Image 1 (cartoon, rainbow, N blue to C red):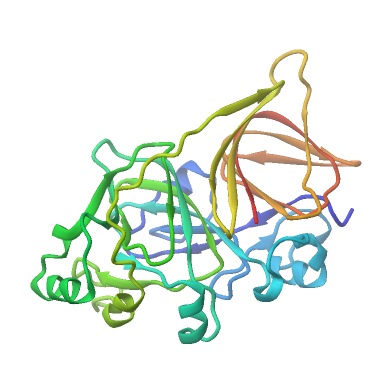
Image 2 (cartoon, one colour; image 1 turned 90 degrees about the vertical axis):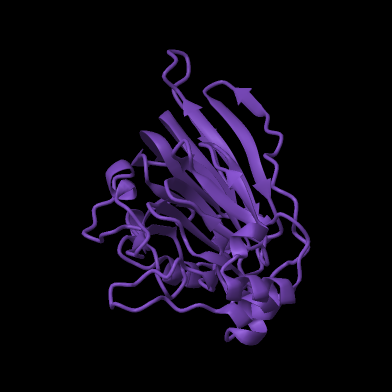
Length: 328
């Protein structure tokens, strides 16, 4: 069953600002500490996912997709290969103030890499948690460079409250940072390019301050972004055993939230599949259950990431769970 779903095993990152929540709350068996990021679905050379179930078990996701390009579907741009990178991120401390380039700048200046537009879905946060999203007023390169030199950069930034279940679409060029206490699922372009503007003078595990990239950052910043983000209007659409809610869409990905509840006596499972246009990735953020497809089955729990090839076999999902449903 080449077009059947399969589990993915992530790659882990121990960046200095990370914590232990992903391990404890999302069933991650790793000695990585602190655990800052869990790259759940990735073909990026800095951290590739491994297939953890089915006929491709033990292979990298990249090798499976190289051998089966039809798994991507007809819609995604295949010139860069698999287009997305999906993560869990635990910000025990605030992340650096940073910005990502767009595709054109990255391609020309970062060895043909993709740029990075991303989306955050807030899984949890502290009551006082905030994030940085753009500027509080229009600015320019000279103003920002002066503020960096004087240590007054924070005066120019939008500080936004971050509550559980919030959604933030962060386009390339947006100055941003996750604040302490925020746990998110991040859906992004398959890129690992980050330009740091400020990092709180932190010392890494080698006793050195982490590198800043001020000149590059100031070349790619969107200086006009001066409106705080608004939460999108969201509507739950119900059918027996399931509710869905659209979260965000951009040229690179589309994300919905899917709530499954087949505990009712008359609902044994819901049917799910992908079309010929795109693969789908199901990231389980709450609950547990089972999937059956053909003569095979797959148990899932909170923290599992499941790849569904384009034009997939029909999948029957049972249980009580919440998924992020992601497609290109």
